[in-house]
Image (cartoon, rainbow, N blue to C red; front, side, top):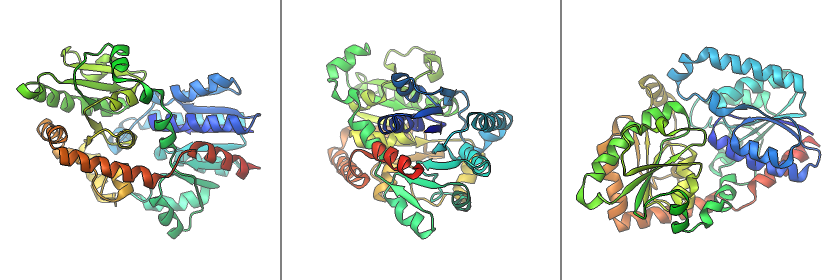
Length: 384
């Protein structure tokens, strides 16, 4: 069968790559054309079946209401290109992976054009813009959800779904980086043998530009304290980015970027400062004490405050319905507040122990392994 997959960010690329492995394993005739990134492309190159990568998500990733407005023409051009590409290729199914801003447009088009539509990693209508449920019911043939707390919500709203667990557990537990010793990791990336704090600013250029100045000022503050003068700061840099993207023109000797090894960076860090998103859930599954920070354009933030219906922005906190770790948002996302929280993560043993216990509960609630393969099998069964 012919599968047209659309992932628009780093987390979608990760989940899309694992889904592709399952589709190739269970459908010997799988022909996959996709929008994604390096992880999905690597799986495709292992099999060399089909057309492969159409667009790299890093070429057009945009986040936030104001940012979308500024780049509206570019986004519309990408939507039109995608629609034309689907019609030209004629897939058996269009598989949308998260990325709701773009994928809702494609869902409506693909449905009206007569294509089957699956949505993997459900759009977070439980958090905001609940009216989109009407579009899910109208345009999506099958919804595949990945969080247990979503089940009751979609049942109440009358949306059919399939739940096979959370694929991030497989991605984390199966990562080679988690089997590498600390000494090997440091040698591999040319890092000094010193304790370090992990910095995760995201993968989109806009969020990196917003997060990094605050991260860097926090790093300077902590490094300037005698008790932390020996600490290093390691940036888990996204693939395809360069050193200059991370505000490292000053060449601070205590800050080091590591490209393409987020799990390794998290695994051996004493603590992590993380932009909200999938990375905070990955840190919880890996077991790295963390603080989440987030800041965006004021228009985006004000609109978000008005429409969001959730208590937390981090998936781990949402999973257990309480704050396993602190979230510092907008005005509270400052170098001073981050430094205070990082010190608490490093110095307060009871705080760390309680956080790690909450992490165990997050993992338990997300279910066991094999989610990606189970979803692939369910998709094929639906199509048959």
